[in-house]
Image (cartoon, rainbow, N blue to C red):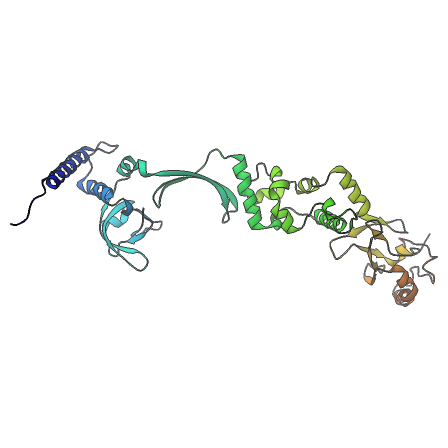
Length: 364
């Protein structure tokens, strides 16, 4: 009494009721792949899914009545319920919990109905990215409905360029130590660094091979060598020497051999390897093999003196110097007395400048 009826609203409500009735009749006739009719509970789940599409839930791994909802929220049955064993449900009522919402009312949802009626809301993404846990390039095809992952499978065909980009990201995360470095490559890198520091043409005449520079320029020097490399284990077969040496053209490679040679010849005729990995070049050689050498050798066109690590006949260090002339003048005689007592059969001349260098116990 005293209230007017909105006839337009009434008509809309009646039309909506008729649509729902027709939908219920249609769903009652929907059959599964086996030809059996769906139960009323499943139909109720689909209707709830239309009403609450953000509350469609999928059971989490491990079960326990815990579900992830399409809206990204977690939900859980706090009491034993048959629905807790369902793969998909739709939550009709729930209340907020501290970590997960408690399910108060829900219905099961058949996957076939979900696939049929919500296909348009599903998204498919393909990704090629570095997986830090398994240390591989992971190429996946993922189909989702909101926050739910419905399918996650490997890609059959992977774009080689995308795989290279992902592998480079993995190398950056792992650090340069994941590459197959050898002692020879470390020495080569140290030689280039030394020449770059002292070449009168300037630092820009040589590439910067420090860790930061190499990591920043992986796309330039390493990417072309990564065909087929999609996991950390594959890096063991990488031609790292080829990738690094390609940073120098042929004239620069020859120039490097001249300025920072791998070996130096000493008066005994031996070719002794030079160690460039420490602070400055270092030559470890037995004392008797450098008799007659007036001064310490130098590299980089005489700009950088070589540190001499003089060894006993047993190859134990007895003196370290960058000034061999000063050692002959001031330190040799004291060293000679000690070594002559420990190695009496070896050759210990009074004048090292005029003595004959030898690799043997005594000169022939």
